[in-house]
Image (cartoon, helix red, strand yellow):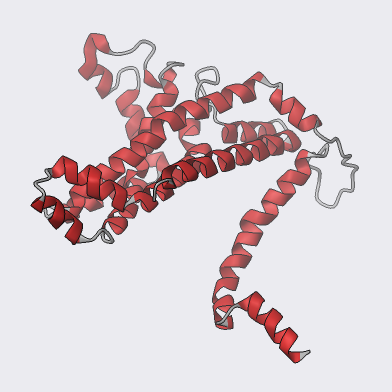
Length: 300
């Protein structure tokens, strides 16, 4: 009996039970902050749910897939998912490519390397409201970018142009978050053996060949991580369109699913419909992330 109990305890806590004690606070944090809201959102998406005064007892009937049908037949929802698809197509490849190239450059022995590393990271830790103000100054109708372009400037201007609003936001988010992903790649580059670069030098490989034949394969796990993180971050886009375009403008061209959830759940008092949008978004991101991971890790 004692042996069976010890075996179950070993399977539950592992070889070092003290490790479970160290992990427990973060596990509780995840359960409270992420797991519980997700489960509750799924519950709301299958019920006619609405906000009430504290302590009020009201009937919230089960409605099955009615909220999902409402979401799937709403043109605004379809457009928001299309907008975020445009954002991800621009943002994710730029993030992966630029952060890897810049990390490789910043990993080399160049002048002002520390200054450049800090410079790329500063926008990431700067409040979005502050940097959004700079970008609005640059890209408004009379901004510096349009003055430099002169007759080549788009009309309507960048952030009020239905075709250019989301690409402009994608470029802004890429620039703002680039420093974080550069740090991830810099950490990964420390694990690439110098012997591989020395062997490439002996074979007469140039910088470009060493980059494609040594650096890119050597940081492939980091590339998978960066790709998935960029996908998840992009799918949760909210602050940037809210601040840059005044809330999804022009005419919903920059509305994201998360911003639409805010409109439906908070402004329009339909948290059940907002929850259905959120559940579909989570499922979509999960499918794309798993598929991307399988493709990126193939051949390792």
